[in-house]
Image (tube, rainbow, N blue to C red; front, side, top):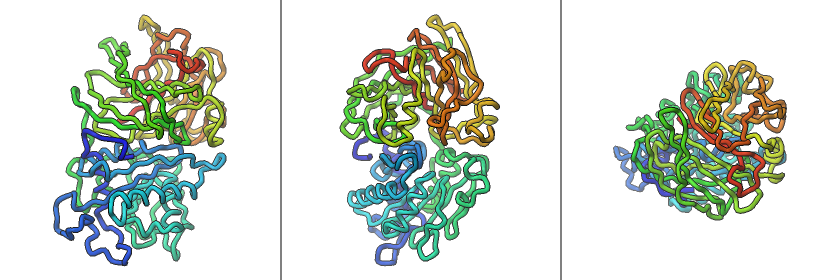
Length: 498
């Protein structure tokens, strides 16, 4: 990915890689590593320079995720000395076999990426950070594909382990050094499950009150990771606030939802959204039209303005995908891991993607999707409120989505949900808000939950504002049934990052 992006804040890329590489590295292929904290060749074990204490780091995401799950984590590493080239967060593509993830296929893609990175970096070993089911895939790569010959530090974050994947009975096979970062049980999947616990032979860290995604964005968790790979505390443990007038270099990729396959040649128009003192939003004139390359990559620079957030209008070159209107908060640092997701109009790809696409209703109402990039959304802790306004900006309705009856995980406890993505659909077509999740298996899966919520889009000047814990992103409604090229077609994706 790094070959496609150039950041103004290149420190983002630098820091993360450094953090993963240094502390307690694996031995070299010859069986010895005289200076595991130095990969630059100067063998200066006493060096205080961070650039002398880092390795290139590869990031592996989990199920229904993409490289942008590591956006804040890699930015933190970059702020602490890693270069962009040393931070390699990539997308696992088409990794489903029917309706189940294919761990062997994921491991094969990991091996291919690591081989590529080693060849380009000139290093003999890399550090690797894995999240969720990516942990299981990295285990497979280490044990069955010779990964222990290519990795130094292995960091498992919020992961599910296969405790049967061992080398001579060792679940943390040498010579790599292992760190696990896990929740204290606030993540529903981890409660009482040994496959999410400590690993023998690893340094194990547990964090109270954090959910599965927060493990990747929390400052204290980051500090543990950084210290593990560098042997030192980070000098910049916190993310900066957006700076008005600051120009940030952004690189991203257009992919289809879930399968992460690239949508090459798509058009991207960045559009400023300004919030007035009254709360009304104004859609500013669109920026330069960008065209993604054959692998879906694009780049641009964004200048942050007061009370602004950004909309990306993304349109494929054919009718294979719905138009997407993707809203996000203001940048806080340069980023090379942005991902703009598109929904295919018809079947294709994995069973999960095909079923999900087919389950989304079309019609004169709008379909909006809400996601948090770095925390799951749970009743009792988080509030998601949908407010609607007519063309005169008069209020016409408000509904709270995360309520006791709207349990994030169908059949599970509302307090222990694991939702990071909500689809708001008028499922019953009655033009009114419902009282709970949609009973559609294709929509209600881990991390993807749907709610009956009517969003009138018969008039395109209608506004909808999504409030997540006091952070508001304002959007306009677009009919989901419009044909490609019409100015009122497609889906809204509202993406929060803290």
